[in-house]
Length: 153
Image (cartoon, rainbow, N blue to C red):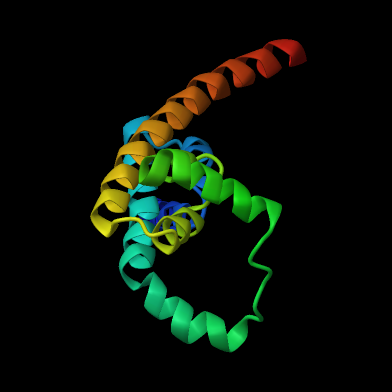
């Protein structure tokens, strides 16, 4: 039961930022492949929700509770520049490492991206980045633990 709660917690946190998956999966002692699957599942759940229901959420929830923000900021201009140059592929590439799953999905759809392409590219890059981050973390985590253990002796 404890392991199921750990997996659910990691899954829910990965809906907002994928770095929680590799770090918490490693700390919980999960197999790296299980960690990748949980992390990708969490990210893709958010991507699907925001890709297909993001406009409805924005029109109902956000307009009621959030005040309007500036439209033309340096950050927004950067995203538009990336969008014009690389489209859904560029935003999807950056989402797992720099953006959050909700942020990347909202940007891709708000800038006129295809829902189908957005989901496919997000899945592709979430698998790639999650695998790289997870296995790097598991490898580096063991090395760091060994190093710290050797220094204390």
